[in-house]
Amino acid sequence: MYFVKVFVTYKPSVLDPQGEAVKGAIHQLGYESIQDVRIGKYFELKVQSSQEPVETVVEALCDQLLANVNMETYRYEIIEMEEEA
Figure 1: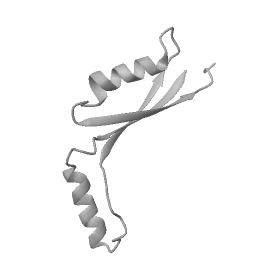
Figure 2 (figure 1 turned 135 degrees about the vertical axis):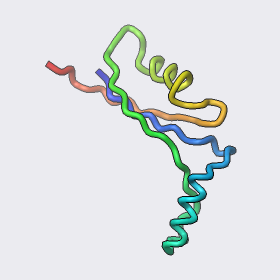
Figure 3 (figure 1 turned 180 degrees about the vertical axis):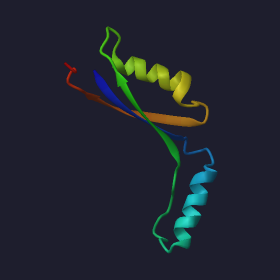
Figure 4 (figure 1 turned 60 degrees about the vertical axis):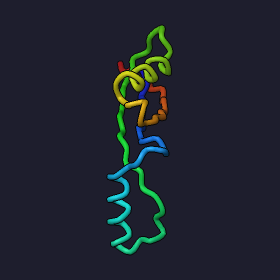
């Protein structure tokens, strides 16, 4: 069993209006040192071990469902879990 964390964000070339709004609010609070804010999505997946590598499964899910690959990019972390009894 694997625990997978998937992070999806806009590509750097894509305008992030929510991120810009949050950055503006942060600056209004006086935190001018914050230079950039990017908003994204976070997914947690539990993937059962199979003959197919977990990386292959996660990348297929990201490409087909979790991310709009035209506008977004993704990265993931895979943590191997002990099997539940």
